[in-house]
Length: 498
Ligand SMILES: [Zn+2]
Image (cartoon, rainbow, N blue to C red; front, side, top):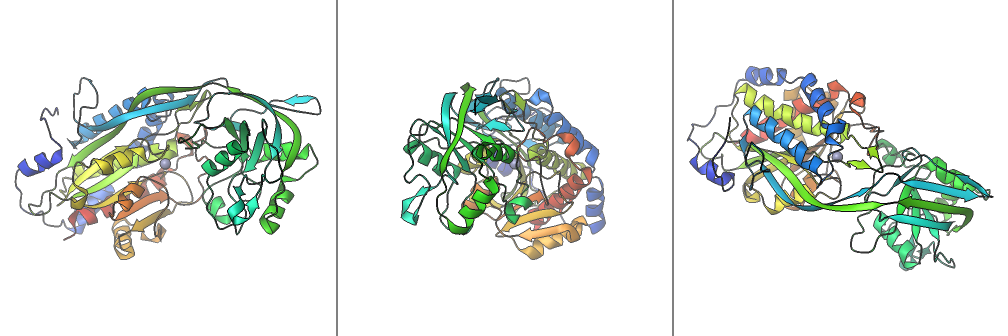
């Protein structure tokens, strides 16, 4: 099917769509039949495809972003969705209006990226990946400097905690732990710590998760391995830096006979700075490159069938982007978020394949720009093809492929009763863990705009989160099926509510 309509957004299309009588709610057996068509092999195939080297980790603003957008647009078309974007995706043979795009600069760390450390005249070369990973928006590095441990890296005299007090780090590299001491109330971000290091004259930094991890972070799957991180301190000149493994941080402190665990325990307990030199000289070397490109969201639509409700829309989204290839390492992003993209496609297929027409319009959106700061969903909220005042809710699905078999659902502005009811329809009510606002993800700009949201993620640990090991073979098919069944049932409910 080839669409040649020159659409000024789908509002026009909605106004000219053939009128239809309100669709009577289908008998529950029709809904059950539709749910029964949801099946994991297609989803696993899509995940394998999107996380294969041919899409190179789908980094926002790169050609891989555009090619993965093309893949999703072609799937939307073959499933029978209608275009809903504001400009052609590309000058491709398709010439379809599936996309929403904006300029985006893609930064990447070139291979080889080197780290070495010297202590007592012995030089050690940690492994890229398991032992260290450059911060992804780090500038080029060419540093050799003594390393100073600065605890959690906090410099906050207003709250009487300054880990740089009485310390000269000018021309030095600093090592700080992620997070903050237990009971330390003021918020502190990685960007704050980088700013403090720069302000005190440091020329590079290392960061590591401490050996003492909170129960909350363990549930989130945070472990000792370095993971992909953008420091997002774009307003200033960033420092070159790397995330190192907890084990490597322990080794670096052990040079001077210190225990990282004991140090972290003391910092958490008494909150007195324990900053000190390490007797290690750190060497970092890599090149960082910036290239101008385009961020691409892909939008596909199922027009609503109810004369009174079809100008209202339900948005269902999943981000498609991931971290690309960094320092020569491929970040496949199978669980994050090829899984959500596959679930989105499966739910779209369930709608169009079943012939069950929703009363309201449904917009399926494949977002880019999520990993670096929700740029794609912010673009959508700033230029929505259906006005936000006419949008009933946004459903987001993200890293929905591994874990303990249950589904975590974060709700804002939607009732737990309704969410549970959808779980019953989908046959997964016993497997739902319902919460309030879930921090982080493409639902956030919608929530900030005042819309009801639900975000669906698979519950339990995601041990490969933001690592090169996030590969298709770690994905569990039955979890994908549950997520797709639930998303379909919830979407059906919201698209047809009176
Ligand atoms: Zn994600």
